[in-house]
Amino acid sequence: MPATQLQFYQGGSYPYPYATTGSGSALTVCRRYNDPYLAFLTQTSYEDEIVFMYLHLSVPQEGGRLQTPPGHDVISGMDYAIFRNIIWAVQSTQNQDTIIGLDPETGNVTDTCSTQKRRSPRV
Image (cartoon, rainbow, N blue to C red; front, side, top):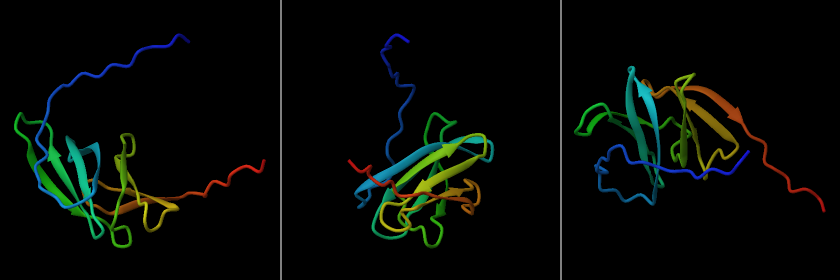
C-alpha cells in the first residue's frame, strides 16, 4: 500500500469555555440524547465533572454535566464507542488496570474491562 499524506481541515472552532486549575484535559465527541456533543473534563487531583458541549449550534452551549463515578474520580483519558453509545474512560492514578464504560446520558458505569499489565519480554 503506498504511503499517503494525512491532512486535517478545520470545520469550526469553539472557545474553551472555562478557566481551570487542572493540569490537562480529556475529551471525546459522543451522541447524547441523539445529538452531537463534545464531552470533556479537566484533569484535577480530585473528582472531575464531565461537561457536555452541544455541537449542533453555531454558538457553543453547555448541555449538561455528569459527576465521575465513585471510585473513578480522576479520569485521564476518554474515547467514544459509537455502536454501543458509551464513553470508555481510564485513570492513570487509581484503578489503572480497569477501563470503564459510561452512559453519556446518565453517567452510570455500564461496562468494565480489566487490562493485564504488559510484561517486558525476556532478552
